[in-house]
Figure (tube, rainbow, N blue to C red):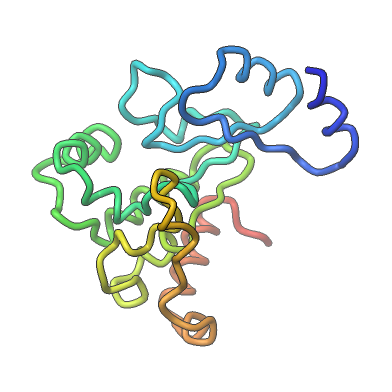
Length: 191
């Protein structure tokens, strides 16, 4: 409370705190008091009683995301632990049967739609997760290669590069129209 108010008063920008993992108990209340947006990640719930969070319950003063530069992408996470994937498939996506072995585009779309529908003021998703919506646009190699940073590994940082050019991405009309449609349907589109 000594440094943050001065920093916040020096700018008109919205502040967002990375309040993930093990943080002091005072952090949530301090952020709330200072109007600092929280960061909400579905697979990293703030409550220790939950395995997954529900994007529909996020506070307005938050940024919801499927992951960060320090986490695996949706597709990479899907393949990390089969038991967790099965649990997520049933509990968070409310699907029946066995979860697909790989995070198919329809699964990625369900997850992204949950995030777009959240009450969070901002929904900021990694580009790799947006691209995962289309089986032809997404990276065709190992999804683990899409991870940007592994904090515990000093030799694996900021290595990810988009696998197609911007010009090629812009030329993918079916993908771009679909992306625009799901964003618009969520009410987050710009009119």
